[in-house]
Image (cartoon, rainbow, N blue to C red; front, side):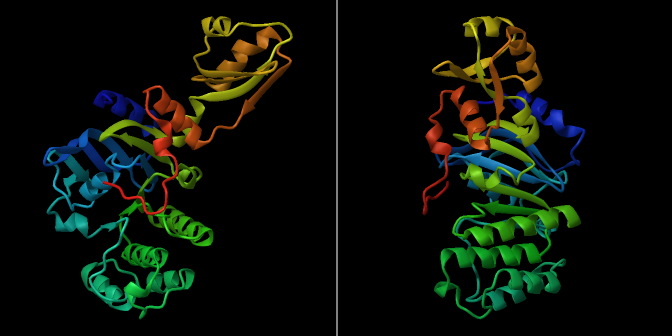
Amino acid sequence: MLNVKNVETSETVAAASLPPPILRADNISKTFGSVRALDRVSCSIAGASIFGLIGSNGAGKSTFLRLAAGVYRPTSGHMLFSDQPIYENPGAKQTIQFVADQPFFHFENLKKMAALYRSLYLDWSPALYKELLQIFPLQETQPFNQMSKGMRRQAAVILAIAAKPRLLLLDEAFDGLDPVMRQNLKRILARQVGEYGMTVLIASQNLKELEDFCDHVGLLHRGGLLFSEEIDQLRLSVVKAQIAFREHVPLEKLRDEGLVILQSRARGSIIEILARNTEKELRQTVEPHAPLLLDVLPLTLEELFIYELGERAYKVHDIRSSEPGAHLM
């Protein structure tokens, strides 16, 4: 389990460049009988940002979102929205929207649900609702029970965004959407964040969907938060490279000179390494040995998480893209 102080240190790295936190989990735990879904999780989510919450099945992602939405009461600790408790706080819930993995609708079609939202949420925008209907071409009067899973998710997203929340919580936001609709949703969310200061928290198993989209990521595993990092900072802290030397240079020598080598693999005369160093540190260590080849390679978000989890002896395949129909805790 990650020490809470480590989370706070990680958050401090990006604090100077991020807006004040809008959502804060303070040593929060949630149990269901004998099952501990979340265990002493602490993190902060900045306003006007997109935060990706990653984790395997049963990691606690859906539980975290329901605590943030005020659906669940924490067993211990505090979940705060603008420094106010969320559970049983109608004022906070006016500006928070939650789209579950399997959306539930009180009425049979989108038109009636829109009327309900208009009566409940003070910031409901009819103009934005109509605009979203043009982007997601759904029939307002089509019964939900005749819609596909992707169509029902689009309907739930339309309602949530048109309510103009300050905090939007999405559980597996892109599940069931085709590639065009996924890109449309990303553009809409980015616009709401950039123009109106909305904060988006997305829980997902699909790392590739979040790679070029989130400002910040957190990794849940077995109810605990392993780390929370700004994506750019995370990428800068690990470097991947291919190296070839004219004469053999032992990896132990490179380690002694400052490289923190996490993984290495030889392919003929070429060595591929992954090191917990910056690119500058890598070059400063390797270049004095006059390498024949020194190529720094791009790292995907999936690779970064695999290496982070690898250090904690975790089975990495569990966090890769989920199979259709998978359910979260």
